[in-house]
Every structure is written in C-alpha cells, then in structure tokens.
Length: 479
Image (cartoon, rainbow, N blue to C red; front, top):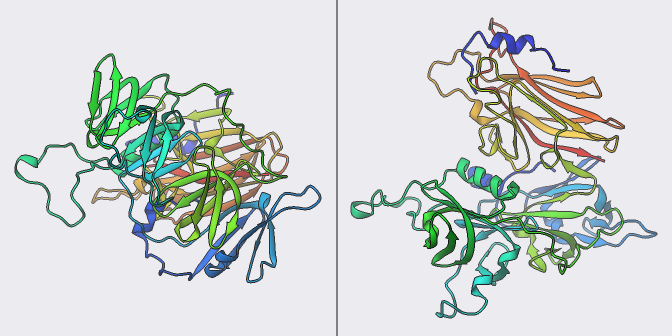
C-alpha cells in the first residue's frame, strides 16, 4: 500500500525544494600520508570484531589449510600464533599513503581495474598479428611487466584526464594550444563513467568522446596511438586517447570454452578484492601470503603476487558478506515534495545521489547507496543474514554553498526497519560526522532503509528537503 506523505516531507513543500569500511585510494592524496616503512597499525575486521595489528606484522601473514572440512584460516602475529577463519574476515585495511595515479583505467570482466597506460609497441609494424585481438597495458602498481590482455576479457577503458594535460604546478597552455581540448573529466564525471562501465550491459560497444558525444559500434583495437572504432554514425575512425572519455564494451555471452571459476575451499569467501595505493583493484581468490606479498589467483591475469607495501585494503566479497549496492531492492519509493519532475533524484549505487563519489566528513567510500529524502529502499534478506552494517551521514555535496545559510538545509532522519519493526532512528545534518551502525537482523526477511526529510535545528520552524543528500556508505549484510 502506498505510504502516506510524512509530516516532515509535507512541510518541506512549503519551502524551496532541492535536490569492510571501504576507502578509495584517491583519498590518500588528501590525508596525511603514513611514513615509509612498516609503521603504524592495520585493521582486521571480522564479522564479530575489529582488531588492530602492528603494521610490521603484515609480513608475518600466512594462509593455513583447515582441518576436518573446515575452511582456511589467516595466521598472524609475531609467531603466527593468532588464527582467524578466512570465512569470518570482512577486510584487512592498511594505513593509506599517497601514490601517483595513472591517467587510464582498464576494466576487466572479472571486476579487476588496472590503473596504468598503453605502452608504445615493441614492433613498429602496426598490423602485427594479434594486435587487434588484445591490448597491451602497463600497470606498474600491479606488476613490472606489461600485460597482454585479450579484448574479450576487457569490459571498458576510462580516461581520467587528457594525456597531454600539464603537470601539477606548471603553467597552462597558451597561444595555439590554449583551448584546444575540452576540460578534463572531473572526479564526479570519472565516478559516473566508472559506474557506467561496471554496471551497464550494452548490446554494442560504446564510444564516449571527450566532448560528451556517444556512439554505439564495434571496438577494433586499443593502442598507444588511440582506438580504432567502427559505427554507423562515424564510420571507421581512429580516435586518440586524449580525445576520449571512455569505451564500454558490449556484454558477451557465456563462453563454453572458458575455464570454470575455482570453487572456494570450505566456507572461504568467493573472492577477494585487493585495492592498491594507485587505485588499481585486483579481483580473484586468495592463494596465500609469502614474504610480505599476497598471492591472488585471477581469472584473466593468472596468479598475481602483490607487495603488501602497495595494498590499501583486502576486501572479501561473496561469502558471508553482501553489499546492498550489489543487490536488487524489491521495492523502491522515492519522492521530493513539489519537485518539478517525479523521481528527480533516484538512488545511486556506489555513488552519491548526484553521481559523485560517496563522501562523508572527508572520508570517501567505494561501496554504498546514495539517496535523496524522501527515500525508502526495501531488500529481501530471506532470513539468511545476522547483521546490517553501514556508515551513515549526509554527503559532502549537502553542505550549503551560499553565503547566506538559513539553517534548514541538509537535514534528514535515517531509519532502519526490519519486518515492520523500527531498529534505528537517527536525525543528522550536514554538520554531523559520519556514524557507524551495526544492527542485529537475525532471521529477518524485509530490511527497509528509509531517509526522511529533517528539521535541522530546534529553532527552525519548518522541515525542508533542500540538500537532503544522504549516504548509506558501506551498507552491507553479514551472515
């Protein structure tokens, strides 16, 4: 049954209406970097606890096989005396340190994202056999050697900035060079394009130009000099990389010849996502630890041996942990009083409601849901989960930018309901720091996340929905 308009949202119509903790590696450049060397602490987050580990101990990690049908365990500590079942681990987080980020992201179909560049060809022959069927990519944050990746394994390519953009601190171009290229992609644009690459399922390859135009067609090749693309609107064209925003490849059918994904041992998580300092993410199954390195068996890159010196976070997915942004809500209710069009601000997965990176109080999150009040998202848990965890707060874009702040902008009330029972009600404003929540949802079936219009100050006489941009950051359910 349609829920009646709440009092808070009703009164907001009387005023002007407006629109594993996972931290991005990009945030490293904005925070005080940790010192070089094995100093500080990392965090081991499990379904039941959060423990700090001296950073030097990360060289002493080991993966031990389980006994009697049990899954593997992570051994750690000075003498590897501590044991934690891998199936219970949500994430291992390391202190962030700034690292240079390459201008290109290459997305693979197994979820891996490589930050790097397309190197110059070793052979000057442009039509070398096999060139059109694969792409050479150098991701120095992952491996020293150049990867040769079949195009069938590639999901997309994202250009974060023009490849000829001036270095930081240098003078802008002048004369004939001035104004030659459109502005580089902003962080918000890159975030939107990244989400589109990860989530879209186009029937044809899609070319997104720097000027903003899009053209469906067929990608022929990716090289140092650009991409070759065929379409009805453009014909057969060669586009330089610095003229591109992104390329999104068409969804492929199941390959009967493809090797089956290895099944996780025992109760081990199905996959591990390794976030690196340069913002690369390597996805695969955990194969072990060795001399300060983590070994990950990937679907498209084979086994990768990654130095823990470069790791920001190991995040375990698909076992006992499920992010709500990876699930489909069974019911969505969204409205803004007196908005000029219905559903003007639909919820976003892994982005804020205005399609920028999820940020609360200076922290940036890779996973979560961005919404605008009034919003209600319902998920079917089927009684399979025990905990609901998230970090809640208003997105940084909810901060008023006007010199005259009325005091009624950017205020909401978060509510969490389970099978009709209220588990949490928390009023928050744009001034509030992010707040972590951890709720018992054992045997629950219907989880409802609600964000209502708020009344930010006791002295305020009106409710308002202006800048009510709220985030359910790292929203997840745990078995």
